[in-house]
Image 1 (cartoon, rainbow, N blue to C red):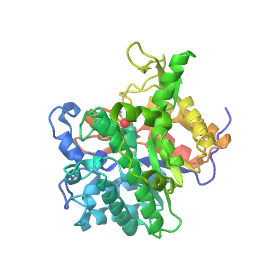
Image 2 (cartoon, rainbow, N blue to C red):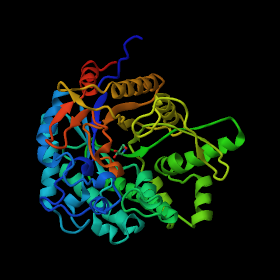
Image 3 (tube, protein in one colour):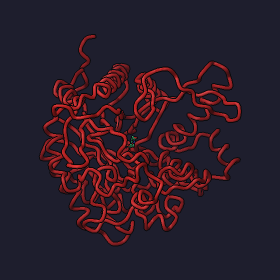
Length: 445
Ligand code: IFM
């Protein structure tokens, strides 16, 4: 195969999230988050792991940025822990929290790395959960206030902003399936939460436009997964339509078109009498266009009509990651083309893509993670093909910069291109990181 050259100024990045790496959860005035509460609830997280220490990034951020620099990383996507800024979610500001992110941004810029900030990657202040969490629409206003504060203090240096990370996960894993914080199993609640998340996104976009940030861009990150039918039977196609509607269109359509997909809205109304949408909500949402769509892509779904359910997942033959997610780079290509054609996506960033594999062991100071390298390579190729076919893909943030706290799986799954020894906190770049350094240097595969 000949060399695949990427566009000039393509942002080769890495991504992380606050609760997954920072640790120091009780330091410098940080308030409690729903993930502190959830991870300390017995039985919720594998092995009883918590984010109390995580990768100790809060104290080691300089060293981490230095390592990014050595690897030639061009962009770093990280999230701000809301309870570090507002320990109670609103009201009293914690200056030390702002200072931390401000120093991190300076460190990045001094190292030639462009910051991209996610405002919400799941660590809601517990004080706001005590008011009902995202089910309480006032929280959408508190989110916009917090967002405005962040634009104010970092906006002179940070030009890329992401409102939410994966609102489907927040709403449904957290409130319908109970496997993420806050741990409820109430589908109607989850649907209402999803609407308030979209509303809060729109409010944060509006606040961004009012902030006066120059040359900035704002978008949202969605976990999108193309859905394919197990056969060409009409009933399997219906299963595709349904899953695609609940996972992809339910978030894409309001963000891009300012309206929920009619089929899913009718279904949720009939089954759950949700969501509660107030007069003017959809008009307001429609008036807040994004500058880019952030795509988190890991795998595809293949479905058919089940005997007792409308959707049954099928497990195709193939290579699977440690999360039991099929390696399917063609899905990334299909997804990008769809966003380009059906959603007329202005600009796209892949804000997460990567894989957990189990053979990550240090031997002779080296972690031979060939499977991760192969995974990334095949997905970079798919992204390149999409660019050739007209998709306005401007950057790619590998998930993750380093191994970290993988939510309900605790530390058992390693997604990093940098290995973390959780006893010593030593970081060791894996083979994939060294390979990535070459890709970045050459801007090609
Ligand atoms: O670790 C998560 C991340 O927080 C959100 N996207 C998916 C990743 C892997 O599961």
